[in-house]
Length: 115
Length: 109
Image (tube, rainbow over all chains, first blue to last red; front, side):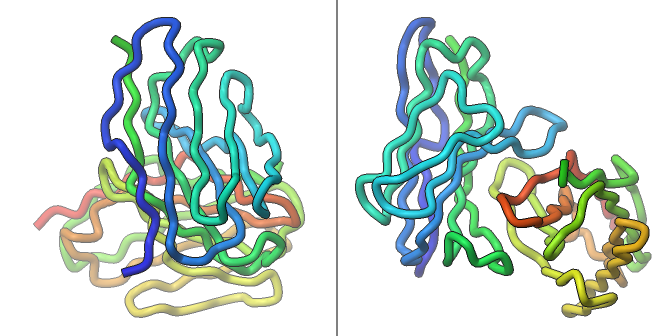
């Protein structure tokens, strides 16, 4: 079945440590997105990529980095510069980067906590 | 900001009743999308309504859009316990989607 796989489901980070969240899709979608969700809050866009080897900052990019070396993969690194990283992280994809009518498909998230 | 704002924040009903959630936004949109999120899971796309549409149906879902009032509503008819989830509206302009804080719906058996 086609879909988006996020791993791991739960992740713990020590102070001063970088961690990388994985996002893989086999939907052949061009665009991929990373969101952060805090309790009782909506989703906030961290980074998005409309095509391989290109990505743009979202609303809360500080303390995060991404890469898009393959169409299927869009890993997110939470760096030590992100002072409040505890959150639920969601990855999504859509079929066309400028396909305004296209819905986004989401993975099941990674919950990151600070030890 | 295109961000949608859902109302109410929480809604509790009995099985079989209808549930109505509202969404307001501030800028011009191309379409508006509704998503559902079960606890601890990712979002699932429910329905998309374009700016030139006024009403759309999908199964037990009915969505309306009033661009003059910059508002939308999602109606779930004959609700079931399995409808318990958070529901988000996402107005879509010509950039990325933005999501509100959602309406948390609890359907009791």
